[in-house]
Length: 320
Image 1 (tube, rainbow, N blue to C red):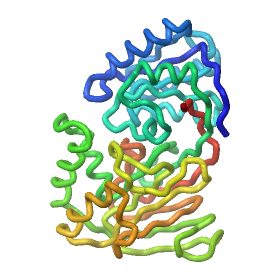
Image 2: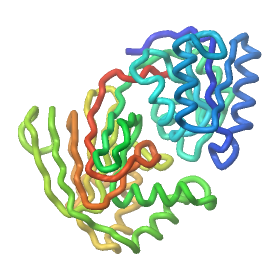
Image 3: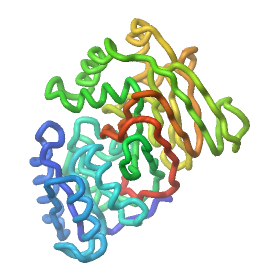
Image 4: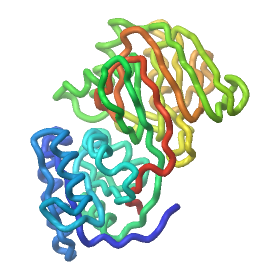
């Protein structure tokens, strides 16, 4: 559901290191715009993810440093949003975005301007609210608590690429993921996966509503609430963020040469007919694979096995 919004008090969460250091300048421009338009702004900048979450929760509860916010706004990329989901998920408090990251996949999916912080700030003040689903991830292997994700959880090869790309300072943008992929493709590559799907399963693995099981050698399994990761790579091209389901893309055993040939099609979402690429949709999924890492919204999310489920209407967002 999309409704008109009125936002006059804002808690702004910043990450000056977003976008290889451009986050600070973007935050200053957005905050100045908010104040020029008469909004009351409370700035939240903390030394750790846990402290950021604590402070945002305090603001939402009305016991923080400023007035209870009409909206929480993240100035950063998908990684910062992923952190703050722990504070805003299932609260009904709208999340606004001033994109300042290297990927900005959630903002792009929702139509938020990614190159104009003033336009994005005006959208916070004058936009509409929409509810979308979130993914909820638990990793038994890591022992960490549950993780929310808004875009895509990658496992296997793509997770290793993302983790390497996160540590790279050059090149910028999507080219960084290409370079990381070329490095990672020379290492551990294909592993045996066990994929267990439950609830409203489609695309051929059993009847809708029944549990289904796939055991296969695979390069990667990506699980999407939205369509893209890595700055616009259409890994789950049919994903819809408010259908109560998660989309899966399974890339089966391929030679390294075949994978290099397939990468451009994977990025563009044009590989549905490839015999080694399968797509599924389900309300919940459990993935098991020896030693395979996971990333959620591009952030580390432990190692497999992991269980994910779609949580309908878990996040309210500000959209055009």
